[in-house]
Length: 129
Image 1: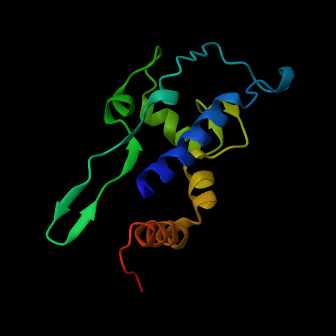
Image 2 (image 1 turned 120 degrees about the vertical axis):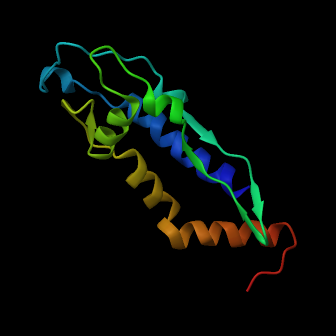
C-alpha cells in the first residue's frame, strides 16, 4: 500500500511536469530540437517486494531502460531526469518543477514516508510503536 501511495504521488508530479508550459508563450528560448516522446511519462515502475531475513523492501523508480534510452541528438533519459531535478526541460528550457524533490516534499520526506508506512501497517493489523 505504501509503495502504491508513493508511486501515485511521483507519477502525478511526472504528469504535471508534462503539463508545464515549456516555452512560456515565447518568452523562453525555443531549442533547435525538442523531441517530446512521452517516454518519461511512462517510465515510473514499482519493483517486486523482496524479503531478506526479517526485512521487506521495494522501491519506486525510473525504469533503467528509460534512463539508458537515447533521444535524437544523444540526450539520455538520465540526462532528462537530471535536468528535470534542476527545474529544466532538457537542460535548455527553464521550468518551475523538480520531479523528485517536489514529490518527496509532498510525501513529507523520510519522516512522512515512515508515517505512511506505519499507518498502513496499522491498517493491516500489524502492531507498530
